[in-house]
Amino acid sequence: MSSTASSARSLSEAPPDFQLLFDTIAAGAAERDRDRVLPFDIMDRLRESRIGALRLAKADGGAGLSHREQFRVVIALAAADPNVAHILRNHFSFVERFARPKNVPHRDKWAKLIASGAIVGLANTELNSPKVGAVPYETRLTTDGDGYRLDGVKYYSTGTLFSDVVQVRATAPDDRPVSVIIPTRREGVELVDDWDGAGQRLTGSGTTRLHDVRVEADEVVFDVPGLTYSLTYNNTLAQLLVTAIVAGILRSVLQDAKALVISRKDRNFYYANAARAADDPLLQQVIGEIASNAFAAEALILTAADAQDELALVRERGLPDEALAHTAAEIAAKTKIVVDELTLRSANRLFDAGGASALQRTKNLDRHWRNARTLANHNPSVLKAQALGAYELSGEPLPGQGFF
Image (cartoon, rainbow, N blue to C red; front, side):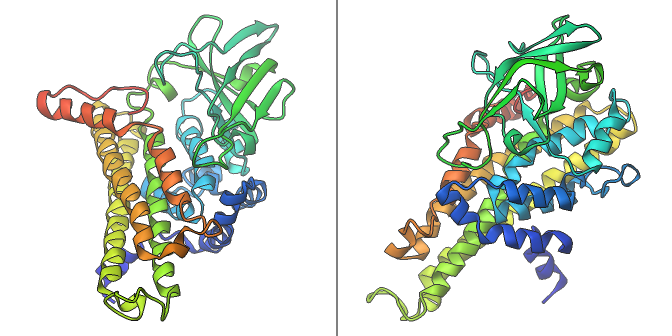
């Protein structure tokens, strides 16, 4: 095999020390999704693997990987189980905002937390907000002696059910936005497993209730210009992580489509083009289309990851980053639109590779479409496409916060 062909086939392969674990995760993914078995044991194994420290600097006890290298791991994990990959999405974003930058308050504390293998969740969304993704927050931080108290209700708290620590977005006593980073088992923190989505059923994306929770002074990071949530396009990475999980689903669709055809052996429709399904040119075409879609999706993700690497390098050097940040957001938005479409189309095309038996509930092959559709809805493509069109036609910049 040529070096080019080898590279093309291994776009989403994880490093060897993760692949064995991912194979184990994949072995039970369909059954867990079908029977709604929450992956607490798997998350314990991922803690032990310290997968959450991939981007943490080696000097801080991490692996020091680039964005491109980390996204290869994310795609491979998502191919094994997109629920598990999505549990880690907010954790990876936390590392970039709080554990890697040298000038974030209490940064050494967060770096040690990540290096230890701890998993961080997020409690951000509030249903009373008329503008999704906007501030201010009704969840409030109030002064209590030398610390604070925290009260509020959050929804769609992806991953928090399985996390050691949760980052809560709130309004500070002076009405500034603030991040509160506290243990999930602290008194007054209530995690409710009430997520009832059509897909991504095992991500723990339920309600977080905060009842007069004690917060220490070193568990609070106020939003200040040039850091964490005040950075322009600070949320691009989080959105790209969702799209990478969708690309992982597409890789799994390909694997299942191939297995379907191969499993049919000498059984095929009497009017088909070949007695053996794997020799049927129409089924070969289906597999070829899905394989091409999977390759394109992964290549797009890694291109977008390269843009994130370029942006990170500029920011670490303290150089102007506005133009690069916009470019990275633009690439991520275009990637989302294409990857979502390729994956949803392929998840439907999967059933053209099998007969009626492909629809058996035990196989649970519909999970691919359900999971991809659920992830795609996190951030509507129509709004992304409109913003991209306005930029192309009039130069209007993409929205700087929220879902870009």
